Length: 351
Image (cartoon, rainbow, N blue to C red; front, side, top):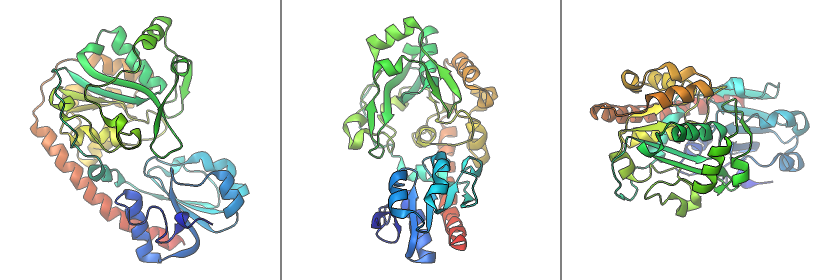
């Protein structure tokens, strides 16, 4: 049995300066080490074959869903595993419905992004442009957005990346997808969207992929990841606002590090997640509705893309509004820290 998976000081998250580590510390403070109780997040849960082989019938798994709103992959394995699950999630409706699954809802855990993401990258100067738009992993709605920037002649007005990558099994690792994959028909469940590039745009992709930002050194840093950095500070200094293509455009409201990078960099933004601006406003953030409007917030993917493309242009926004957003972000972090202790108590009560 794996000590790294156990609810104990031997767990791989123990004493780590991460949301997963803080949550584990808070739970252990109440429960101490427990036999046949396991702790993980959506990245560190063992493979289901290993769960069945080594852990079947062996107690309770506590899953803290911070990177993702929930992990519905376990639905098809629950009866075989003979395990109980306590799932700490932003959206219990996405968790598997099963007598052996109990859910605990969180609200403020997004605040930990304010402690994790750093705006301390190397400043590499670039020329002024209108906007910044970073797209790393390949997804159909992102590729469609890129195609509309290209077709509408707005691509050169901003700094736009499209690396066409995919997450690897190695935690937070990235690797390029093939051009054949990128130019093929694709469906994305998180946006409920299907897209295939046109012949002309496919030819352009073949000639121009990957699109990279000036001074992007994140691909040569730890594990080829940009999760914890805003990137080159010049990207923000020399553009007027960020266009944020959040992960979830359907099914749920959820914020990732993508949302918090412009907040930490004190940059205005237009967020393209599913009702992401509504969620941000509920925490007290300024979402610049007077500049970018609100109608795109709840639109389906195709309409959202057209709406945001039409709004791209020169804007003037008082930078003091971004200073206030930065302060709100750290208020959210403090709420997240308080909430974790409450969540840990709920876990302890269920064990």
